Amino acid sequence: MLSGSARTTMSRQILEKLVTLPIFKRNLFFIYCSFQSEVETLMLLRRCLDEGKSVCVPVTVPQRSELLAVTITDPSADLLPGYKGIPEPIPSLVELQRVCPQSIEIAIIPGAVFERSGHRLGYGGGYYDRFLAHKAPQACRVGLAFSQQLVDRIPVLSHDIPLDMLVTEKEVLVWPRSENEKNSCL
Image 1 (cartoon, rainbow, N blue to C red):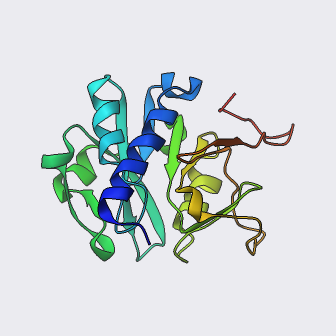
Image 2: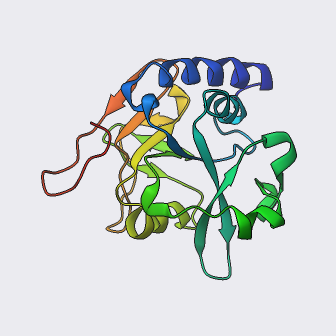
């Protein structure tokens, strides 16, 4: 377990790696709102907004086991604790600022553990896998992780959606999609 200051420092290092990648030139980002021990994303949200990018974040709808993508413009004013205490857009934005998932260019995805071959373990709900498979298959799938979250092998199920890229404080890993899948990371 990382201390708060170590998590912040390493999150900043991950952000600095991410913003140097060609994918950062894209304009519509779907970014998870960090919670507890995840790589912190508030700096990334602000950086994208400061650079004029469109930013949407997830809203969890547990009754339908789905995620919605909702645009924000000011994380301080637009986010409140939502499902399981995770920051989500305020209710008035959910209806007014919804984004068509097929327009998302880059999806920044959380996880608890990441495999060196591109798979991830989330928190057991399958929300991101369903969202990426059925609503935003075109999005470049980018995981953010601390290097200590990387392992050689995790259990993978047929419905698990692999990442296209993983950024840690130490390295950037890239996995090309198969030829019959559109890869929006390249």
